[in-house]
View (cartoon, rainbow, N blue to C red):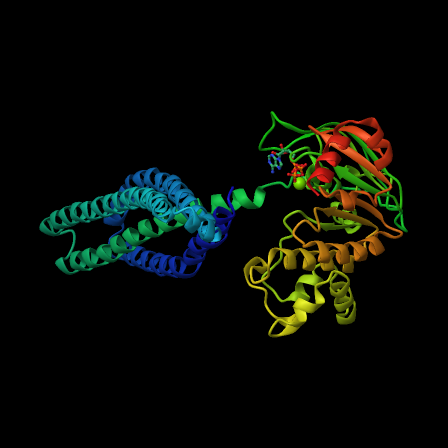
Length: 468
Ligand SMILES: Nc1ncnc2c1ncn2[C@@H]1O[C@H](COP(=O)(O)OP(=O)(O)OP(=O)(O)O)[C@@H](O)[C@H]1O
Ligand SMILES: [Mg+2]
């Protein structure tokens, strides 16, 4: 499901339920009261005729339920399509520069057009069903009134009923009929909101596949900073046929620095995602400090990690809020210190409001390398026992990379660190290098050992030395 689709459910669907609860309910309530009052008076004026009117009621309920169900199904459909259109628009607006750079404005507009048209068509079908429902209710209702009027007129002619009473009866039944008609319409609203509710419900019922077990095993305290993965095979839910990891084994001792290297798509970032338990592997176990992460509270597991992800996403809040994201109770001095170590202090202080400057959506007002340094500061303040660095310095120039690397080296002291890097300079510092290819460990050792093996690592390393 696209982000925009989720947002559409959270907004327009909830809006529908909201308008039912606020407007429609009071309208329906008013009509229910009218109906009750009119029925009581009708019973007083002429029980016999009222009884006949009551006989017509089941005739009304048939079409009401039939069309009601249809309105509900069509609501789900039209909202789904609307959400699709919103999702698509969201994606295009989000990547507006890419859309413009590739000259795809017209096609993006056309696709959005089609999506909206199709949502509108579904909406029309829903309105159609609702209109038929209301029309039928009104026809049956007023047909009934005419019938009763005819029967009443015969009673008047026969002298059983006075003309005044008939007039009273007809007036009251018009009130009652109007109320029933309005209630039929409200029923349409209820069905519409029920359709929207179905969609919200679906969202709320979505069980996270990563859940806390009923009795989570506690992680050892104080933290040791040990991770191990054994026999792990994993394929992403979206690509069940393509294993991202296959029989992957890795143990990192407390305080050790391990570098993961390998070609793009080898599964390096996937290792981090499994450690952070965004996914569970299909086979094998992931352990943090000796505890199977499946038996632990995911929150407690993640607390042990500070992660600098490959994309390093920021939030639209201020710089200080973004750093605080790493640890909520961080003091300003600590945040400044972390920013300094991550070489972010100079450019942050140069912003119009310094640390309080809002960074724009996803931190777009910063350059790629600046974003990356802020993400490193965010990870540094976290003070977690295990550091996960995924290409953390890839967007930096050589000078800044050297400085940030020095800060990271310092942070790695006494911490367990897993670092993914393509650049050899970063890898050389590791205690151990694990070479991955196709989701497996293919080589392992120190730089010197791996160079002597003349395998994949030596080949990758040679290529880098040659280009220097
Ligand atoms: N969310 C996802 N859904 C489906 N497949 C995915 C997903 N994320 C990654 N993959 C696939 O899993 C494999 C491993 O991806 P991963 O991100 O771990 O590679 P990587 O080693 O980090 O590569 P890079 O160096 O380019 O970052 C790739 O083949 C990729 O196509
Ligand atoms: Mg990656």
